[in-house]
Length: 480
Ligand code: DHB
Image (tube, rainbow, N blue to C red; front, side, top):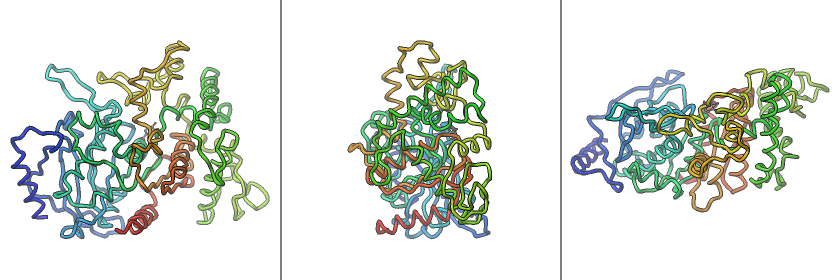
């Protein structure tokens, strides 16, 4: 690591006075790395070196967010070339995230303990702003800025392969919720030319940005179809626990009616290569919920009596060993009683029936901080104009935020390995969203592992034993 510092110092000196260029982003690591110790939940102590606050693009727009931190655990101090890199994004709510530090209670601490290099980049988002010289505020993070930044951070690592430790061909990304969506975009869109103009503009390194594996916890993604998926799934609760009024119930029905055509446009196939359609999709979804409940039952969990779970004890009791069926309207009502569902539209809500902007409306906003609609349906509703349509520019931005557009596109180098988890009681997006992502990956021949975590809400970085077993198995298969 002394050698690392020497090389970095030398490079910094070399480039210190030069104007940063695309081919050679300017980077410096000032001072010596700080030695730190992380105390894990069971008391183990993990020694590591911290390198923090490193700008990863040549043309920094927002110095608060366009930096990364990296951490080198003790086992890698001397031999660090073959160590995998665990890159976690702390993005939540499609907001900006600062470069972060490892935590003993999430996947970053565990990754350090496993001997992986940990990288936690910052990225711009819906709320990041810089002051203009004239005193005004400019929003720096309208979509797709967040994913562009994260791709630039991956490129920075690869560009600086000689001085930054870790195997750049074994980058594993991780994120939760909007961060899970970002991880899925990193996985889906490797090297895709559609992001190139944005990457050039910020002076990202001119190298590859594909990754080895994407870990996605409850990804809030497929935003342009997530409203219709949500209503298609949950509309049976509208007159029950959801209690929608007439106007919103009508919005729900209209959105739900749009979903079958979208689903069929995906041309997904389920087990036995059967095409998935709106007619058989609920049964398909049910198989994941049954597996989830069965895994919990095998682990000794009691099944809730009011969740539509049918056990082989002759009824909907709690004593049977096997989950033989789930009555979906009852299960969905159970989810809706645990946590109030989002009102329709769940994502593109701005101005529909007079409703306020969501996190998604904000990230699709403009540099003035004005939120925006991003689907034709909601724009038509909010403007009261049945012929309204989002602009081509908006359509392009929405496309760049959706991994579903890039899986199967020959111009993308999609990650070979995927680990996707979603809570079986998580109502932040419809189960259809992660299930379709998983199914599209499988249908395109990728190694994808998906499960619904029983009775779990909207959280991430759980079952770290399971996650790291999965990661190590993939690394071993790849001969690392
Ligand atoms: C997140 C949660 C949401 O419900 C949403 O719509 C977007 C982002 C989040 O937790 O990141």
